[in-house]
Amino acid sequence: MAQITAALVKELREKSGAGMMDCKKALTENDGDVEASMDWLRQKGISKAEKKASRVAAEGLVAVASSGTSAVAVEVNSETDFVARNEQFQTIVKNVAEVALENAGDYDATKSATYPGASQSVEAEITETVGTIGENMNFRRSIGLNVSKGIVSTYIHNAVVPGLGKLAVLVALESDADAAVLDALGKQLAMHVAATNPQAMSIDDMSADAVEREKAVLVEQARESGKPDNIIEKMIVGRMNKFYQEVVFLEQTFVIDGETKISKVIENAGKDAGTEIKLTGFVRLELGDGIEKVEEDFAAEVAAVAGK
Image 1 (cartoon, rainbow, N blue to C red):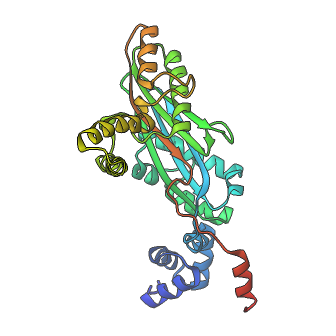
Image 2 (cartoon, one colour):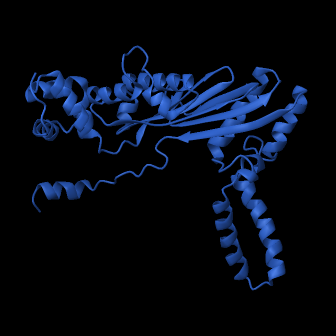
Image 3 (cartoon, rainbow, N blue to C red):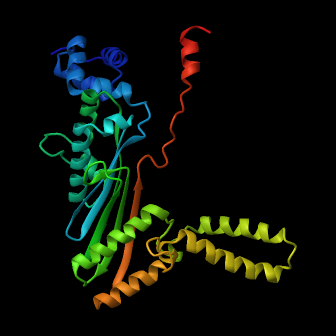
């Protein structure tokens, strides 16, 4: 058995772009033979994956999966929309969602769980597939909701195929009402969430920082009017209520009828069903949200290659 020295690991790492531990494992598996280790890394898809890992993956798909009183939404990214239309990629995203459902949406547990039909983890399967598909891929997010009784409705806006698209919504409704009734309501509420992107479920759930920032802006605007402080205080109360009506789910006006407050929509549905219906949570997962995309200047790139 050849000795796996630090110099050998360094050499393989520089040639392959793979991580240190992967290089050490490859050398161990191949008795210190660098070329054989390179082939081993390529077969595993690790070499290509590491080289592509620095490239921004902001495209891809989100997916939903549900069973009984639980549902999850996941996001798996790729570099291009072209890959998102690839059947192999779509299968991976569906499978990741199913694994996430088995793990109550827990991201770390899902990432380390065994990928369906494989002997390796979800994370390892995605890494290996990078070498096959030829693009950087990333399992970015997984979120789950559940209720003790009732339903968690799922919705994909502009689905590419059933259960997969660019925007996913979950809405959790706790109730003894008929499941079909709850799901119909949940689907409508989910469409509302897709359209309005509320910041919080209730006023109490609002971030204190977001509330203070809004108040500070409104106070400054009111002071510019030259009105006295006691009038400004009343103005701020009214304007904050309007703010909550814009960003808080239960305070928003239902987009489907354009007039009823969401809290009232749920209350009315409960009266019709003969039992209370309670909104306990929602999730809105939009593809690439928060990822900083690199804007490439193609003309500048061509000029640089031409030596200008």
